[in-house]
Amino acid sequence: MGDVGSVGLGSLGHPLLGAVVSLASGGGVLLSGRLSLATHEWLADHAVHGVMLLPGTAFVELVVRAGDQVGCGRVEELVIEAPLIVPEKGGVHLQVEVGEADASGFREVSVYSREEADGDGAAWVRHAHGVLGSAVPSSETQYDFGVWPPVGAELVDVSGEYVRAAENGLEYGPVFQGLRRAWRRDGEVFAEVGLPEGERERAGQFGLHPALFDAALHALGVSGALAGGSGSLLPFSWRGFALEAVGATSLRVRLASVGAGSDAVSVLVGDESGRGVASVESLVLRPVDADQLNAVGGAARDGLFRVEWVDAPGAVAAGGEVASRTEVVRVVSEGPDVVGEVYGRVLEVLERVRAWVADEDLAGERLVVVTRGAVDAGDGVEDMAGAAVWGLVRSAQSENPGRLVLVDTDDVEGVGGVLPGVLALGEEQVVVRSGVVRVPRLGRVRVSGEVSGGFGSGAVLVTGGTGVLGGVVSRHLVVRHGVSRLVLLSRRGAEAEGAAELRAELEGAGAEVVIAACDAADGEALAGVLSGLPEGFALSGVVHAAGVLDDGLLTSLTRERVEPVLRAKVDAAWNLHELTAGMDLSAFVLFSSATGVLGGAGQSNYAAANVFLDGLASWRRAQGCRVCRWRGVCGPRPVA
Image (tube, rainbow, N blue to C red; front, side, top):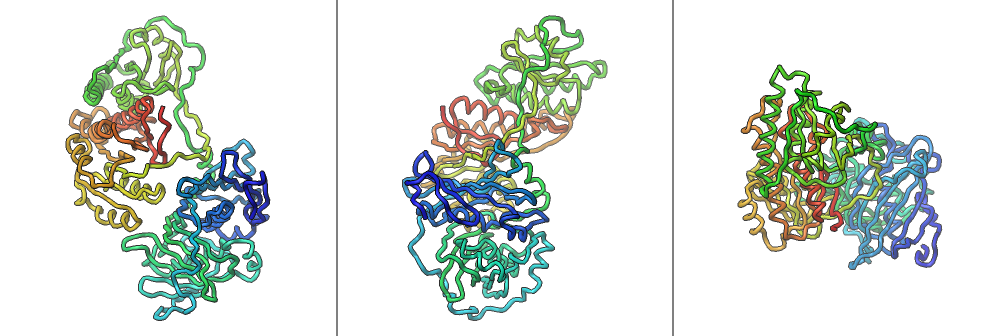
């Protein structure tokens, strides 16, 4: 093990990592390596739904080796964010980055890859992220592996285990078929696993051979009481991994559920002499299907898009006259009541657009809706009510192609001078800035591998917290972001269906949970909840995931069908914005919908509500607030 502070580049001699360099930023290190089927043929024995993947145990091996380089051999947490596909031809470059130590001695660690075939200009993809700590100077695993097989354990037939695994899409070759025997006893599973003869000589090159460690987890399949009972389950989140001995070729294993209602298991590993080899305080597995894997290959690198506003093709002539049967509706919001303006402008435009599309005499003619500062074309959103109008009309355009045109300008009164040229473009949506006309196009977002994370050290409030989406978000916050306190709001609170089970699961994962019956759209009720939170539950993050659907074509929408949909998104978001204004939040996350950006027939009311959220996000960012739109994977943005 080299002194990383004294050399720029060193050799590691690890099967997956070949070199290490100290980072100029101070205190961190970067390890690099390369893998391929030509040099690591044993990886071909690990396929899921026909796709060769680097096993989750290999990620642990990588970060443990990286942690050893800086004296942090314990994996406090490691979350696998994306599978790493091993290509049939060519290789994959690896990087493991370890950051500098914080005040407590912990270091962040990330694993990246880039296929050789993509070239040097391609983006690195982050596959795993976690935290390393100093290894606990303990030597004995909390189990006596010297007494074997365990007293009172019932022998289980494992002869058909790999046939059953293959039926579930887990295709293990000889190197990974290491499960030899297994026993069950009162919620525990015990097993013996080993490497095949031809692979044993390679075990000494690893801390713990990934194929051997992976085989230790195959025993989960012999008991439906544990997380691995069925399906294509792969390691997702590791907590508290410690390696006590290296070079093992066979193992004795104990697996047990972590708490009632939890989908996590603890793992204790020893060798044939009874000596402790490794331990995992908590391992969570998640299902994966063939469609997910088929989408991973390209999606992680180039499947993410955003709307970009580009100059219109060709010069747009100013002057001229708008066709006599083209009507222009100007929508400008200037009042201090943001929520009131949203309702007023949306309902006003709804009525005008409904009347226009219903008038058969106007078939083939166009209605132009003009707004000011309602679109973020790189300059932020100023009019959130206008933004909601854009959502409404975008979806109405899907139902009435060629009938409606959206124009956002910085000069509402002078827009008439460019309208003839704008309409001649045939575009349904344009922005005009300083006389320059721009049109929307999809732009590819290159994934840099850098994902901002962190919800602070306080509690995170989730609206719609006991619903399906709220449950997914809450689990994600605890497992992915390490959030330890949650405040879940919903109309029925603890009485909602599934709320008790969700609480038990989150508490089993180590979180403290408050569930409150509160409609966040009711400002007074929300203020009451916030003021009555228990000690230690000061908020450091907000996730607004609540919403209401009432789909219908534009011509069927009424005030009664629009207002409840707006209320769930708009009123609640604005209440959260105002009531948390004095709090030191690390993240303010708004769950929006693609229908607001792309338009969707039958969802004009829902699109309006969601584009308001987009506008609020843009406006908050311009004010220097922390905010994230659409995805719960992002954390704080820099404050201006």
